[in-house]
Length: 423
Image (cartoon, rainbow, N blue to C red):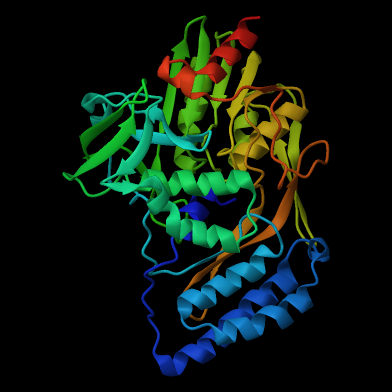
């Protein structure tokens, strides 16, 4: 199950693509590529009804447009438009040589995380000891410009892409946050000028040095660059375990397992999956096995002619205390399998915001033009047979992050989770 983050990183920009093909070959390679995309969906899409979309009609509409595209950039845009007609996540056309403006995985960062709140880009995460923290930036500050460029100007190329795509508002928000945050990162040793509105809405300018964080890297995304692997576990007041990780990849498994074991005497465990876009689907039942004394199902993936059940087998000495899972619009894919599954079997309470609704098993292939083609091959249904794609996991208790709480140094979602565990 491929993380939505990979999709965000590469679909965010479609400008400045260099054509790697000789003109004499390009028309034929385009034709072959269009044929491969259309035929693959026609033959392998998990829903033979295509969700009510007339797929043959889509070929009649988009094949002439693809052939008439002025360049590869336009050609790929047509392919995306055709795929968007299916109104599903985990589809993508990613040029290998696209000028990706999102953060270079493993590159230099500022330690700032951004979240859109009331249409503004608010600092919602600040890594302890980061250069941004040392410079004086605080949670709750609104970022208005980066290196003299307004956020609206930074997002302008993306907005053109989104105008052509049938994306939901949650997905659009993920794209915008990802692209805006990427401009904060860059080459080691460089300095970025960040203009903000502070706690009193007064403008301030900070010069923040980019630094290389000591992150572990994972190649879990296959055709995509290495992904920074973040993991955190600690005890909160009240003897409550807290586990946060940013992506479901195999190197995280022993860390999560060890953390759960260390919290064996805790009153409860909070799994913070906010902003976690997914990853390896098989990890969800693997972790659930440490949280149940019985064999349970977290739901199933359903292909055109196959079904895979997410069965969690109980492990020795599982943790049987209270479980709370924190979600937001950035929680996708495997995070949603884990949250929806444990929620519906009554093992966990979900607190926060409705998740991304992007839960499809997808694979990658290479087109004759050299672009990467991502497409889903099965959907996901929860233990109660609920289709989470497009819907998301609805929290038991909705708690939204506010700028006021960030300025006060509070995390309302963690506070609510602690309250429910202790009560």
